[in-house]
Image 1 (cartoon, each protein chain N blue to C red):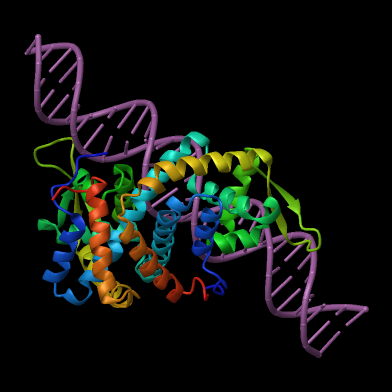
Image 2 (image 1 turned 90 degrees about the vertical axis):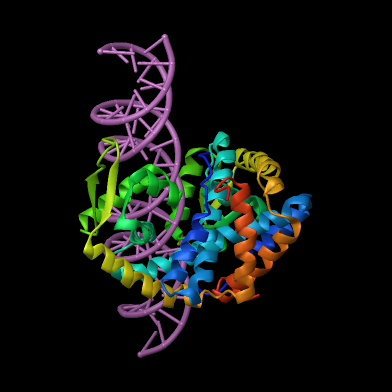
Length: 168
Length: 168
DNA sequence: TCCAAACCCTTGGATGTCCTAGTATATTGC
DNA sequence: GCAATATACTAGGACATCCAAGGGTTTGGA
């Protein structure tokens, strides 16, 4: 990692906002920018852990989702909805996972439009191993205090509900 | 936007983690996944606002950074460090902004290795206009309660400092 | 019954990010 | 002064994401 900056660039941006008369939105700007940067840091950690497995985060998420599905299979559109990514992103991920022998496509028994993604035994094993390392190397050392974790889950959960992610 | 899911997929993932005996890391897993998803939602809102200006978030960030710099110019490496992105990402952004006439490259007066990025008058004007809309459409309607904004800034600020982003 | 609308997936194109490697310029050490 | 090292930027490649468009399948109303 590069040398830390002497000053927090997001705090500086907030000061710049205030200096330009945008004090009313300076704080949310800083919070949103911090979310962007935090996501970048976390994604880099996750991808670093997954790289030895030949996985990216997008592919891992799909494998993990399938491993929790009954029968280890899901329709493409269902996966797209649950992962909340564009259908073409799922197509892309399945192409690569299929090439690696971790999943396979099979036709839906009753709906000819639908394609099922099915976990292979290799895919299931790899998902398990990758999850174990992610748990110990990333989630188990997140750098968030326990009460901060709860705060984040609450704040971001409310935000996601209001954004229309889910209604429950 | 698609129909909201009946259940929160991240809460479900957390339950799956707990069912598989990973209760000790289920909460941080949920928090990290929520940050990923929140970033995705916010980025989509920002890019939607910037699209009419012909800007992406990456290009806007660079324009905004330059607009706060003295003289409206910065070395490429400085911009890379402050935006905390890879130098090649800055090269990419500058290529496109230069093509749009919003910035221009000029040689550093004393260091022949360094290239300065300079804001053009058009770039400065566009940055101002885009910021005004971002402020009113995104930052001013973030969907976060005021006290949650403060919580986020604190929690994520600590995280970023511990991650080595800055030392101040 | 039959056709239009809705739905599902894939292809192709644009963008952004990172990594590796390569070129050019500065700085440091002998 | 010159060679070795460090720094700055760019080129090319791999991935992921989205959007727009296209072709196949189902469904539902006329």
